[in-house]
Each structure stands twice: as C-alpha cells, then as structure tokens.
Image (tube, rainbow, N blue to C red; front, top):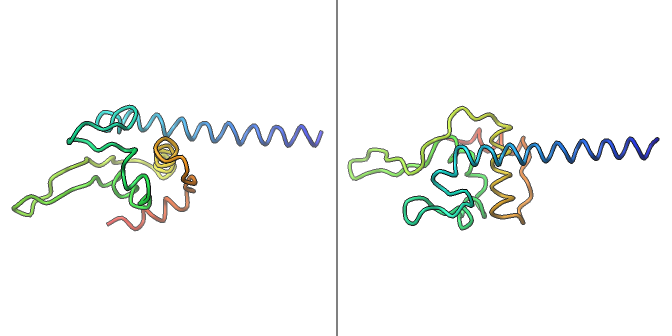
Length: 126
C-alpha cells in the first residue's frame, strides 16, 4: 500500500510538471512565436533568436520585466520606440511557466525557476 501511495504521488507530480510545461509552450506559441519563431530562430535582424539570447542564457532575472513591460529604446527625440511589445495581463504562474519553457527549450542546463523567485524578479520591474 505504501508503494502504491508513493507511486500515485509521483505520478501526480509528474503530470503537474507536464501541465506547467505545456502551458508555457502554449503561451510561447500564442504570444511569442509570431516574432521569435516556432523554434526560437528569430527573423534576421528584425526579431532576435532566443537560443542565442543573453536573457535566456544568463540574465534570466530580466525576463519577467521584458515580457511584461516590453523592451524599448529611445529615438533621437527621446521618445520610446518599441522593440518588443509588452505581454500584458499575464499572471505569475503563467509567467513562471513561460520562462521555464524558454529555459527548457533554449538553455536546458538551467535549473527551472520557482514561482516565488519569478514573483521577486517581477516586483523589481520599473
């Protein structure tokens, strides 16, 4: 009986992690892949490839702010120009699942981020 309970708990944990991964993949495909490509290949000079992204590979703590607020530069008059539009109205769980999907897909050596870590990074967004 004890072995069965351990098996069931393990199965639940496995299925839950698969759902998180699938949700991250669905978010990526619906909100990111139009520009970054289905496989993260980007599009020439217009949209960066994510497999070579410094943010996915080493500056992961910047991803919540970039995803939620977009990424901007200033034009010659000091006005913001959008390089990447924000993905508004994304909850912390969805954000965590998306970031973990990006890490798994483009930098699998990274340890998945925990929800509380993503929330802490998000709270530092300006």
